[in-house]
Structure formats: structure tokens, C-alpha cells
Amino acid sequence: MKPLCSGELIHLISEKERHYALVLKAGDRFQYSGEWLEHDSLIGQEEGRWVRLSGGTRLLVLRPTLSDYLMKMPRGAQILYPKDIASILMKADIFPGARVLEAGIGSGALTLALLRAIGEKGQLFSYEVREDFAAQAMKNIRRYLGDAPQLTLRRQDVTAGIVERELDRVVLDLPEPWRVVAPALEALRPGGILLTFLPTVPQVERLVAALQGTGSFAFIETTESLERPWQIEGRSVRPQLRMVAHSGFLTVARRVSGALKRDENGAEGGVAGSGTEENRDEDKAE
Image 1 (tube, one colour):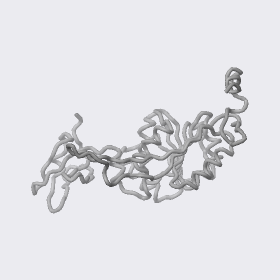
Image 2: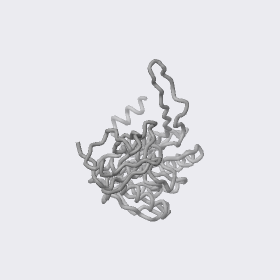
Image 3: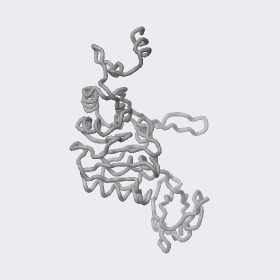
């Protein structure tokens, strides 16, 4: 197992499961409620063990998971919850080597997850208009991942246009993503995926109308994720009293070539000018 080293981020966790983040540095001292612990006593040791502070308090030493880090890192903007980030990675089908655009960067929570998912050979283009958000996000990213050469930060308004072309994925965490539908249509390759995160139903309605209006987005789907933890203590098994319920809606759509056909009720059909004669015959038979 890799030993802990100077400059590495760790969490010290109390028996009440409270997390205390620190970056190890030779010669430094961790202070906790009048007690202390020398960083040198941790450097070179393995994670996953209990240590005692000067007053006898026990703390568990662990490298933070990404989820741990996201919930404790400094914030300039409200972060996406890990439950939503997990759904985004799957529904947007973020894969190693992908070319992905995100807007806006916020505090960098989703950015960190996207960077890990696309790997060293991927490319991530992050658009953010607010300088304070961008600065805090970059600090959070460097603190957890170090340098991220696959990340390009663009300090510009994504609604004014997207520089990149042939993108595999576009992920939007913006209050008015319908203003980005046209630029995203030009930037995405055929078959690419557009995903948005929105907190309210009226926003989703307006977005879906914009997507449908282009005739070039198919398989439009909106979902939400609810996470309910359970308490299991012996034979006492029940849901916990608090849960992470509604936080937002995820809307996903596929970029297609050609105009999307719709029936008289507005439901999606096939793509005009596409498909084989056999497929069209099957559609007629149905």
C-alpha cells in the first residue's frame, strides 16, 4: 500500500464520523480542541488506522474519496450532490478519452468527476463567466487532482457561442440552458449527448420545448434522483429520518442528423431521411 506523503490531502475522522481535512506537511502540527498531532507522525504511515492526539482522542486517518472531498471542499457556488453527479456520468455516458464541454464550473465538483471519467487522453472545456467561481474551482481541482492538463478553462459566456467542434458531450448546469441549445447543436457531433441540470419544472419545460424545436435532438428524457439512506442496527431496520430528496432534474438528449419527424401529437418518431426500407416497413406495420 502507498504510504502517506508530505503534500497529500487526508481526512482525520472522529468517532462521531466528523471529517477534518488537512494537507500533510513535514514539521506542521494539527490542532483539535486543545489537543494536537504532529504531521510527521502520519507521513510514511498507511491510511486506515486510528491515531491518538496528545490528549488521548482517537481519530481515523483516511484518504478522502471524491465524494468525501466534494462535501467538505470550500465553495464559491452551491455544488451538485454526489447522487446527481453519479447519474450525470452514467446518463451522459462520459467515457475515457471523451471531448466534453461543461458550463458553468461552479465550485468544481462536477468538473472533478468529469476529469476522472475522461482520463488522461480526454479533453474537458469548462465555460464560466464569474471570475470568483472559476478561481475557487481551480483551487479545489488542484488540491485534489493536482495539475489537470486535459482541462481548458474559458472565461466566457457559453450562450454567446461555443468555440469547440465535434464534441462528444455537452453538460450544462445553468439557469437558462435553452439559450445554449443552438450553440450546442453546432458543437456536438452527430450521436453526441446534451445533458442539463435544472432545479424547477418551468425551466425543464422551456428547455425541452427548445430541444424539440430544433428537430435535431432525439430521445429527450427527464429524470430526478432521490437518495434515501437506511439505518440498520441489529433487528431495527428503517429509513433514516432525513434524506437527500429533490435537488434537480436531469434532461438528456441525443444529437441526430436530419430533421426529427413528429406525429400530430408531437411525439417523437424516426429521423427524416434515415433508416432502411426494412425499418420503414416495420414502422408501417406497427
